[in-house]
Every structure is written in structure tokens, then in C-alpha cells.
Amino acid sequence: MTYSCLNFLNLGTASDARRIAVRRDEGGGPGLFWLGGFKSDMKGTKAEALSEWARQNGRACLRFDYSGHGESGGDFQVGTIGCWLEETLAVFAAYAEGPQVVIGSSMGGWLALLLLRELRRRNESTKESVAGLVLIAPAVDFTEVLMWQRLPAKVKKEIEIQGVWLRPSEYGEPYPITRALIEEGRNHLLLGGMIETGCPVRVLQGVQDLDVPWNHAVELTSRLAQDDVVLTLVKDGDHRLSRPEDIERLIKAVAEF
Image (cartoon, rainbow, N blue to C red; front, side, top):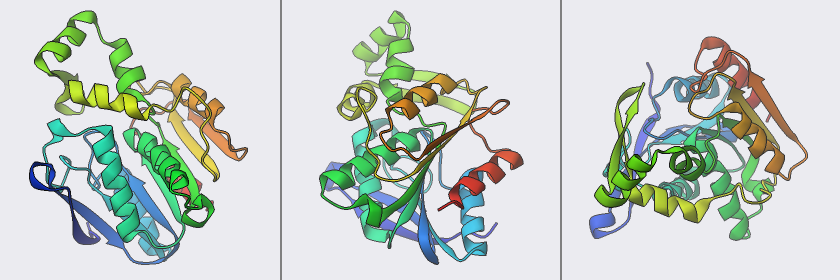
């Protein structure tokens, strides 16, 4: 496997300091900006496939690991949506050149929408910085809607008292779900109103997804104010959408821009 050029971006100070690993493929625009999922890293199947496609087609590709993930420094257990959003904004500002196709998978879909919202707040034209948005099983508001609201009272109490709960995962080791992750996540909820993106949006969602139900993607789509929004439901698709046919579908969506 050929990996892209590895860089590091230092963020924070003192106890908040963390070293963010960034991989870049040089190329033309629009560039690809990858945002991975919760407990995922930038060497996953989808990210590698996009990087390879970008190299083959002369397109720039940018990806990174959130703190506590993959090649980046930091403690996963102290991470929050706000922390990972700060890192997303910093990497975008430091390395993204020209318009980008922002591609967010699972939690990365939420962070992608938060990135666009923050760019708009900063009075930056999203038309100049973002050519399109591709969301894969977007876990928007997942800390609240897909986690907290579904947890049994016993687990909620454990989080409130102990500050952490180890959530079993079919993908490997249990995930630590912290009180800070849940509480801080409430500062970034999007599904309470309309969501302005300022660019076309493509959403890919597996109907067999047990982590992000397909009706969650339907609700998100109904809240996207942009007219050019296409939701594709993959009837036999799971959460990862990493099979060859899923990768082909993802690349086709990205290649629209």
C-alpha cells in the first residue's frame, strides 16, 4: 500500500496539546477532504480508496486522524465533538488549497456539516472553499440522538457517576463513552432546525445499518436547505459501506464534483 506524504500539525497548549497526523496527496482541484468516523482512522478502506482514486486522477486529497485516533497524539477518552471540530477546522485552514469536496463518514458527516457552518459564521464563502459535500451514513447529533436517548437508565447513571461507560463494539475493543463527550456534544446539535450547506450534497446510507438507522439519514435530508440534495439508500448496505460496490458508488458521487 502506498501512503501519502505524512505531516504533523501541533494544536493546543500545555495539557491540551496534541499532535495531529495529516496525510496529503498533491494534485489539482477540487481537492478531496476526508473526515472519518468515531474510533476510525485515515488508513481505512474508504479513505485509502479515495486517496488512490485522487492520485490516479490528478486530484489533491487531504485526510487526518482526530486526536486519540490512528497516528495522531492525544487521549481518545478526553476527546469531544468540539475538540475534533477544532482539529478539523485547523487542518482545513492549514492544508486545504482551493475548493474541496468534503467527504464525511459517520461522525465525520456531522463534523463536515459543522465545518461548513463554521466557515459560514466566519463569513467565508462556502462556494469558494467547498465544491460539494458527500456524506456516508452521517451520524449527525449521534451523541444525543443515537446514544444518550437510547441508553438504558442504568448505563446513563454509570456515565453520570463514573464519568465513562465502555460500550461493546462489533468492530473490536469496547468504546469508552464519556460524560464529557455526551455533554459537550449538546453544544453542536444540528437537527433542531434547517441546515444551510451552501453547496450540493450527496448522502449514501445503508438500509441494514445498525449504528445509524436509514431513517436518521432521511430526517437529515429533510433538514438540508439546499435544493441539490440526493439521498441514495443501499438496500443491503451496512454501516461501513466498504464493499467494492460501495466504494464504486462513493467514488461516483465524489467524481460529480
